[in-house]
Image (cartoon, rainbow, N blue to C red; front, side):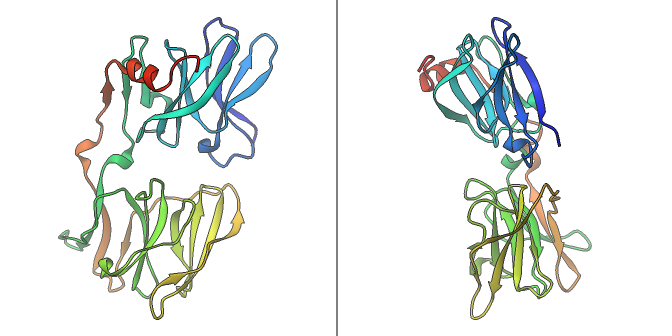
Length: 277
């Protein structure tokens, strides 16, 4: 795959463009860098190692998205240089498109919240549509997988601040909880005999842990099985071993489609990231 630039933006003076660049070795746009390129010389330099959707504000800041959080850094548009470190400002922002957040020259910020902020929980659903809550705290759940013997449930949750893979007893989900990924993890699947659990790591690799369920659940340290630019599709439901009930993620849809508007945002921006510092 060739290097892919995204959404070039020309900054004051007209001599420099800034854009997100996904290199050939990056597994996804989450691994893109923000770069500046001179229109006169063609010289290109990396400003931010990981980021997307850069914007230049009237307060002389560069703002951008990184894994659903808006960051800001003081930026000199003339020399195309940043000063000090980036500061996280707003979390849970949709990263699906550059149009999902914008800021006016007068300091009005508008953004769409991430779908992950729509709280969800887990429920049983019978074949005729009757629900029975499992008692999980409302969070962003997905990727449910029941073990081959039906005694364990692996799932993906963001309760640590990023997606990781957890296992609980099933159906007595309150009898224990174990985190099996230690540096991010998604899309768990069980080996056919239940002795291994696999999951995806940052869309770059398949990881493996060995599982022992006697006398209680335990898992080995994770290890890389193989790497590659593979697709890990979301599946947010599974069927119970007896075939009569489905375990489903039920999302609170009341926040869907809501745009957040922050007035006078430049005051906070300049207070937390002083220009020129």
